[in-house]
Structure formats: structure tokens, C-alpha cells
Length: 158
Ligand code: ADP
Ligand code: MG
Image (tube, rainbow, N blue to C red; front, top):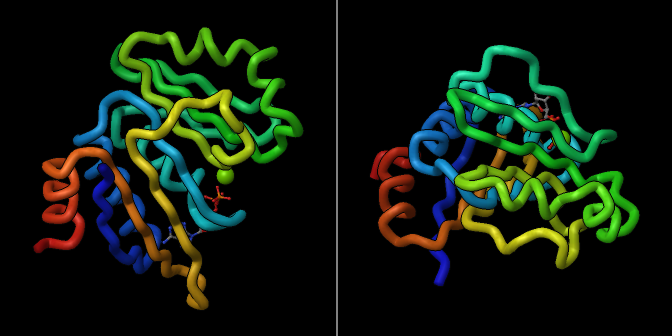
């Protein structure tokens, strides 16, 4: 069963706020980031990591496939599968070892390119660009009704 919350990000500060809210609610598991190039998947991830306390840079792992972070003792992996030609490459790069990390948190850009090599998500963030340069339409899907209600209140104030 999945529960969705829809909201609008009117500018990048709203994306920062969304990342802050989510980082307080989701501490482990699999997050999918869906959306076209330039939708704001990496931008969201940057704010998410910063909101957990990360102070260094957040590079897009477009060429490295993954950037690992340890933030306040917590292990977080940011994947970008855009350039992946074959899901089997994930096997070769040792994705299973990453996924075995206890209480690990995994953010995947372009999860569709990972095929069966990546687990089903706990959270899906779908970001759509609009005609306006700054506005993004988000559909956030989670497995827990309680979490969906909490996020709905915090993001839509209702
Ligand atoms: P993706 O990783 O989805 O390809 P990026 O995060 O790299 O996209 O790029 C998104 C671009 O859009 C950034 O230049 C960012 O500054 C800009 N932007 C404008 N408005 C927003 C918004 N509301 N949320 C996120 N990014 C935005
Ligand atoms: Mg990106």
C-alpha cells in the first residue's frame, strides 16, 4: 500500500525546506529520485545531506555512480545511474556490499536504469519541472500512512 502527498516547490528555498523536513522523518532505506535532467534531484540531495549536518561539497555522482557520505556516524550513499549502460555494472561495482550497510540510507537518481539490481523504494520523490524556471511539482510516495500524514501536515500545512 502506498500513500502520496503532492505539493509545489515555488523556488529553491522550498526545495531546501522539503529536504529538511524529509531528513527528519526518513533515516534509513531506499529513496528514489525521479525526474528529468535539471528537475532538481541532485539539488534536493545536496540540501538533504546538508540538513543532516554535512558541511563539505556534494558532487553529482554522474560519472562515479556513487558518492558515499558518513554524517554524524550515519552512512548515506548517493547514486546517480544516468550513465549506467547495463544494470549488471552495479553488480561489478559491488552494490551488494553497499546495500548490506546496516541502517544505510540510499538515494538513487535514475533508479529505472538499475533494473533488478536495486531494491524497491521506501520513498519515491517525483519532481516535475514546470514552464516556470523555478517551480517544481512534487509527488512524494511513502509506504506508511502515518508518515504520509506527517509529511502532508509539514509540507502542505493541512
Ligand atoms: P537533476 O539532478 O535533477 O538533473 P540538478 O539538481 O542538478 O537537477 O539541477 C536543478 C537545477 O534547477 C539547479 O540549477 C537548481 O538551482 C535549479 N532550480 C531552480 N528552481 C529549483 C527548485 N525549485 N528546486 C530545485 N532546483 C531548482
Ligand atoms: Mg542529478
